Image 1 (cartoon, rainbow, N blue to C red):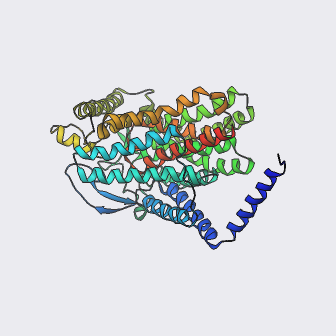
Image 2 (cartoon, helix red, strand yellow):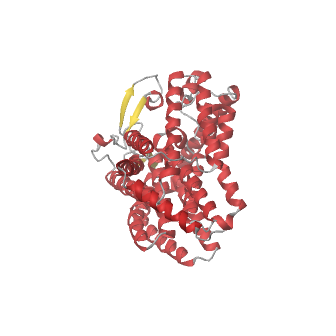
Image 3 (cartoon, helix red, strand yellow):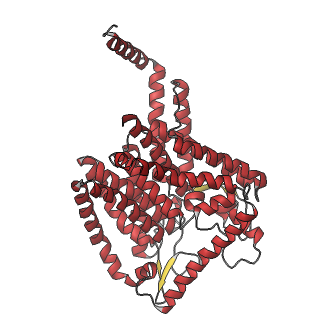
Length: 470
């Protein structure tokens, strides 16, 4: 046996690499890779932005236009650029495209296929075909993350930029109790006295919730919560320089999150953050726990003046010290959600085989229930909405995507808890899942979908890397 053979093979590989690097096609491909990653980062930054181009207005009274119109968002444009740059890079420098972990890509491919199958019995065939094509785009988005995003900086930095920008707008709206005149960027015209604007009412006084540049305070709250968790993972697991920048972006996000008054976002952030910090405490990594404690104390000090000024409004959202009138409003909100869930469940039972069509749940509500006491909308529970739209098979794939990562984690939790990238992805998926128990935007809305598929992609890439090195 020639003991020099491995060294000889390495010399051949190095020589081949040097030769390839001198080829013009390599440099063109490398440049396209960088352009694709920059486009990916911009997609994350622009994810919450409600600015859009209406490709095809399809008004169906009294449905909200965004449920039926064909829209092109700012994040769609950057994502299309990402796909074009990545495709060009693959053509110039062909290489194997990995699907990542089978725990994710198999049910994700099944869910995408179920979306197309749902078009066969859709309440709105054209809309469901359009939404099915968008799911294909999100599957490509997942593949890009698995294959091209090797450094967490490509995710954490744009998430931090998103948090800072949206926090600045949201805090300004909350303090001034009006919009900031950023309508060219998609900001809604906000007036707490206007009908249809989301407010918190206490003692007969309406308080405007922070919207940022999103469609709704709940969407802003979710985007902030998810971004804050990625920043928290950088603070807990990153180096000194990264921690400092992450803290600067993290702190303004906390009061902005509070000003959205989004309970689902609050709960998702607290559970995701507690998961990461709790696992650090379990393994006695006290430096990380201390950083989290100081960060939490700083956050409380930032939020405290706003809570002190508006205690009754926070009481309405937390159920503490409610007046009789506030209790009735809280009960009415709960009854609304339960009514939507019961109605959605009835439609699912009647169309359980292939569903009523991807994206067509609001129209199905309208067609099925002529006398509806609420605005027509999907149930505020992503699993049920997915089941309504894609049938029992789509629901099964979505359920697997929700719980398989946690089954995998429980099987080797000691090993996985020592993998920082995987822990950050776990926390993000946990928060997205929690939000999905209370709202539907991680299934149907552009911003929510970006965060949901981002979580699946990050978990898949981190899992493969952890297994390969473990």
